[in-house]
Image (cartoon, rainbow, N blue to C red):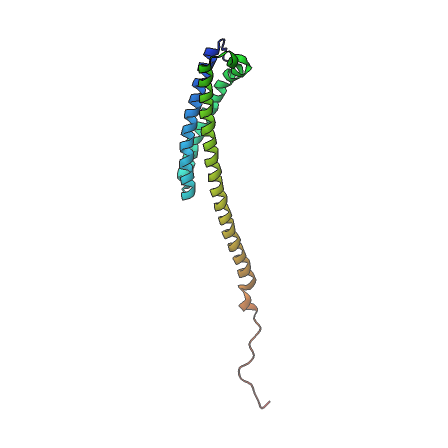
Length: 159
């Protein structure tokens, strides 16, 4: 756990870690843009590879967040009030970068999810059509086997 004794040290480390998070979130945003295209193209192999790369970036971001937590706590517990306006502005700017990038990522993820839901609905409708077709074929496909016999074509009128 970090032991930031001065507002300067806390502000410097917190801004550094949050800027690193913003950079990582920027890379995640790039992957999310690529993901959107791959989802629309239905390119599953490339999508799976991209999601793996994206997961590594998310883990890196989580690690940075964990490292920043002690500084953030100390900052919020009073070091912010003792920091200079320049130090507060640096931390706030880094925080805003993270939030803005995360907001853009969430919007892209929502768009990708909507495309996937639409594709899922389309596939579900096609499966239902196939199932109905199978049921109709089963019900009426063998109808010729159960046809009543045809009446005789010739009749014996002497009878």
